[in-house]
Structure formats: C-alpha cells, structure tokens
Length: 118
Image 1 (cartoon, helix red, strand yellow):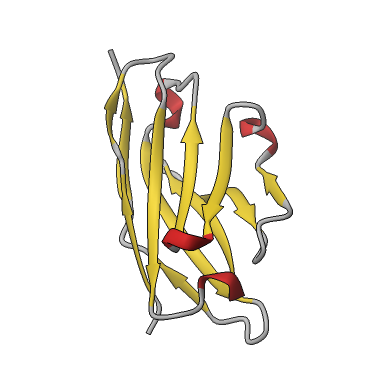
Image 2 (tube, rainbow, N blue to C red):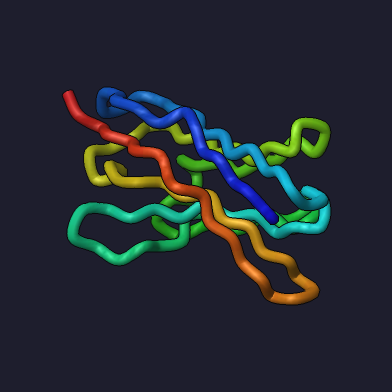
C-alpha cells in the first residue's frame, strides 16, 4: 500500500519561501512519477509540478515556472517542492501525488496547508 505524507506547510509572509516534503512508503520510490497539486479556496485542484520516475525530467504549471522547484531524494524516498517569492494567491492545500507509470494507479497524500499572508 503506497502511503504519502506531506509536511512543511505553514504561515509565511508574501515574498517568503517555504519547502514542502512528501515521504513515500510502501512502494519503490524510483518506480513512481511524483507530482504536487494544490487546491485554493473555492477552486478546483490544480497541477503544480511533476517529476519523472528517475528525476531526470520535470515540468510545471506555466504560471509557477521560476518560483517553484520540484525535486526528489531517492535515498530518503522523499519528494520536495521549493517555493519562493510566495504570493497570497499561492495560499491553499498542497497535495503530493504518486503514479505507477506501468499500471496507471494513483495515490494521494492528505495535504498540507500553505498560507501566505502578512
């Protein structure tokens, strides 16, 4: 059973930075494509960034390029999202997601709240 647990959310001032983590257990980390999504208040869940299984490729939502960076540490079975120059509109619940490329099975973490406010 794949389990994902996010951490690192919290309250940050506009212009600040925050790094989210997602620890994966129950499956070989290197066989999972990993992504971050977010859901802002009153909006649908939206894609933030994705990293391929071996971490050699990643892509981002166009509006977030340059401010957000996705990375993964295979030794720690952990996915990261570095966020900089945060804006109030980045406020929302951030979710870690995993996908088995071979089967298409997907998994979600419970989410972590990020609040950008002065």
